[in-house]
Length: 146
Image (cartoon, rainbow, N blue to C red; front, side):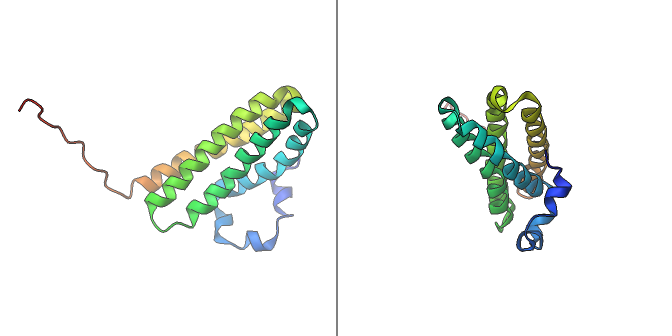
């Protein structure tokens, strides 16, 4: 497996000069998506796992795409919504990697699952950070005895 630091050296400067690149969650999600290409190609070779390849590739690609979309939003509430979508996709990706482990190998699946778990941890903090900026509506108690 390619190390993330080595991979980052190959990324276009059009991407790395964007302020989005400073987000660890985005860099890691983009790395995972790029690395998943080989895994999906392997899964696609077998008729029995073609649909799994499609599901995995869509889910993994959605993580960095939703982080990028959220980063571009103007309010914390909007950002949090897309970070939550990314969180769901990261969890889904982890699930698909677990299911694919018998084809792509336990070691490879474990590496990707660990990286996705790190993205999930980062996103949980990011969502909470964006949500704290807004006062939530208080829970009202209603008297129904009237």
